[in-house]
Image (cartoon, rainbow, N blue to C red; front, top):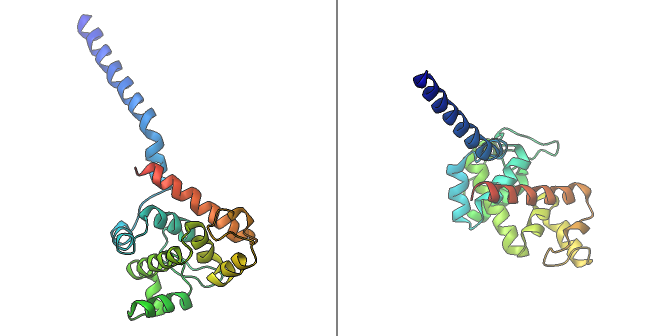
Length: 185
């Protein structure tokens, strides 16, 4: 009887320990499934090379393609970071690298061009918020919004972005960016 009681106590102790472990760690496990870090060999390399927080790149990829390298939008943006062919051509030209539109479905090329592009936008605007707005709506639109005082040059009033899609896009990326930073501390 004492042996059985001892085994029962040990079993209960192990079961309680497992339950406590799961209760404290399930959130991280679930969140890491929802907010993965796929293609990390490319994201980490190019984020470091172009001085952009890798968590921002993951947030962009999650929103743009949900990590589907063959994604294509109704506007013909392609790949993980949903680049327009004309944008990809311009970025590749500025980097002095050979580029072919078919390369946009290759994670290495798409991420390299996308990270370089967002890096250039962050440098231009000195604001992640404005860079994200330009990534979505185009630099010309953001330049006009700044010029006509719809947006401040520091990006502190993103709630004034006049395009609903771009407004939601910037907010979503910033939310996901924060989540990535919180999960992967």
